[in-house]
Amino acid sequence: MIKRFIIAFILLVLIGGGIVGFNLFRDKAIQQYFANMPVPSLTVSTVKVEPTTWTPGIEAIGTAAASRGVDLTVETTGIVKEIQFKANDHVEQGQLLVRLDDAVEQADLAAAKTQAALDQQALDRAQALRKSGAGTQAALDSAEAAASTSKSQVAKLQALAEQKLLKAPFSGTAGIPRVDEGQYIAPGATVVTLQDLDTMRVDFTVPEQQFAALKIGQPVSFGLTLDKLPYRGAITGIDPKIDPISRLVSVRAEVTNSDGKLSPGQFLQVRVELPKEDNVIAIPQTALTTSLYGDFVYTVVPAPKTETPPAAEKPAEGAKAADASAEKPAAPKTEAPALVARQIFVKSGRHFGGLVEITEGVKADDEVVTAGQNRLSNGAHVTVDNTLTPELSNAKQGTAQ
Image (cartoon, rainbow, N blue to C red):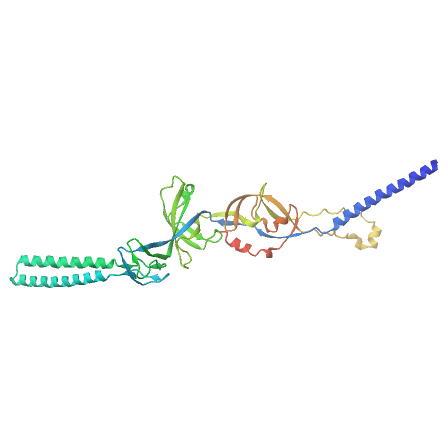
């Protein structure tokens, strides 16, 4: 009985030892397998951080208007007889746009001119008689008064006739006619809008805290979006009074509309340029990631070197003589990538032109990840391929905006 028990115990120990040994062997094999596996590498694009020149600015929203623009109206009542322009015509200063029916005024003017000519002839005769001594001074004075009255009447009727003519007060682009031929119109009725589109003015407001930074002649950039401000102008007026309700100050700038793409009433993004600042650290906005714990970026740094395996025992001199190749142990085979990503929390500042200012956390010559960071984690192995984001070169060129 005891012999059987001993045999069963030995068998149980052998089976348990085999299971334990198998598990140890399996764990070691798995460890060796994963140790020899190549570490996965993620492809990213990067940009090298360099100090740059930053142009700070005051950003606002403005409304474009023509430097000279009016809604033309007539001064008197009448029926439209002629319309001598079309929509979007460029008209010159003094060009006739609309003529009202002025038949009565022209007839009265013709009669007044005839009377004026007759009175002038009577004045000439009175002057001749007075020189010869045949005429009296009273007759001459009466003739002069009559001639003067006739001239004044002609000027008056001429002015009344001119009120029937609507002329362009300055050169510009005419809008859509708002009247038709044969239509009866009254004073104050808008006939057409006239806008000088060669030079535009832009009105905008800025907070009172930035009032001291504004100056006449200061350069201003304009555009439909803050990412693209192709138009440049200058401040021409600053309201000396700050609105006590909104705490805003009104500013006016002028810009040359050389391509004619700006229109009165158009919405524009405005950026007043302030003095430039040197040695500012700025990176593309795509490199900055925002989280609940703060803003951070990934930088690319060399991977830490793998530990050197312990040196092999020094072979015997006899063996050394037998096999010279044994002096050179095989170099450790390392398949780990040479670069890893490192997460750095930063403090960001101003934004403009696809760039963001970094005030703390990143320094010059750091290599910052600009694309592909959504898959990264701290310490992940990476491969740099900057051909994936060629648009970064354009963003870098716009740094000094």
